[in-house]
Length: 170
Image (cartoon, rainbow, N blue to C red):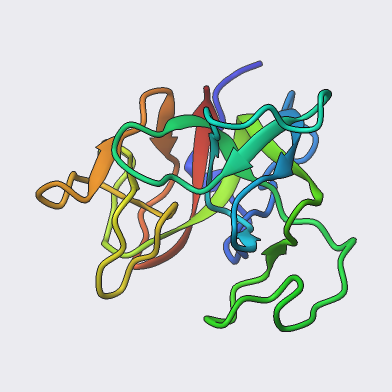
């Protein structure tokens, strides 16, 4: 399939939205093994200390710079939007505790960046929250030591701070 030009993007997105649903996306399932709601559009990492439920990988938000990225959490409309269940205290909607989840490993997905980015910038995932950014979101540099480069990812448009399309092949 020919590369997609960022001029083809529709414009307005929400975190975790599949930008080009008719592409050859690869989406896998896991289970929320974290102690928090896993917000859509954030980096999904493997919990190395757990075994999951025997069929699905145990997925958590990155807990440090050594976390193992698996993909990006895909937005779904299958959960009631309720505080403490699928809506965290910061207003982010996501996968409830101990529920099945979907994460993209290949395709184009909308994510939040707290900085201005260009398609030529590298992609980094945030493992330590700071003012204006949350764990599992993305940016274009390491911000001293708060983010790690995500190989196999490319920004598809000028943007930020805000939600922008990110192409991944993890």
